[in-house]
Amino acid sequence: MPAASRALLLLGAAHPDEPPGALAALPVGRRDARLLRLRERTLGPALEIETRCPACDERLELTVPGADLRAASPAAAPEPLRLDHNGTTVTFRLPTSRDLLDATDADGLLRRCVLEAHDSNGEPVADLGHEVRAALAQAMAEADPLAEVDLAMTCVACGHEWSDVLDVASFVWAEFEAWAPRLLRDVHRLASAYGWAERDVLAMSAWRRGQYLQLLDA
Image (cartoon, rainbow, N blue to C red; front, side):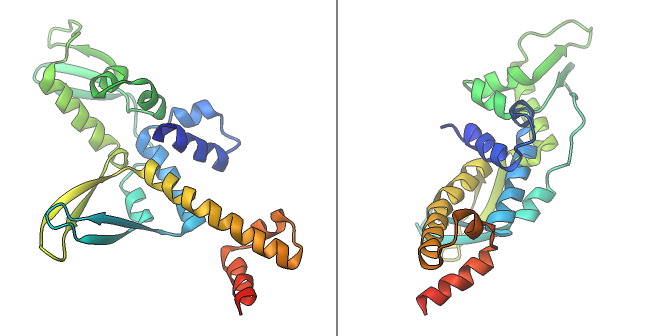
């Protein structure tokens, strides 16, 4: 399943009253801000990220507060947006999950988001050219900064500096994928020991479930 589909699956579970089409039409950064809020409510406020230094292969751990990432994303960007570059004016919107699923490459993604393009004489422009496309991609990134998160890294072992892209949708999905089996095991232990129904165990806070599990281990 593509990362965009997984993101929509999580959001659909978290927001059952919102139409799937409305969730799919969210700009990617606003979608990922919602994913981060869901992750914070379920797993805690900080993202624990592991990576390796590309220079010396040292294993590194990085803690990133989810709220800090969400703060970079505007609540709602005014659309459509406009770019003026080298005599070409482009009216565009921000990419959505639907665009990510339907586009086959980066140029295709840009084409889906361009609403209108014309030159200084008002004539339509069919081929934007490399420079305009690059400027358009930059304008999209500035208008929706959470859509692509670059994390600045410094290796504590060798001092090498580099940046890694954090794919929020894939990261959050991987965390839930690891968390769900652990939760089911906890439900099984508590239900077996106390005779509680699954819904009653899940209704408890994570702290309370942990306290009962500690009693079973005592």
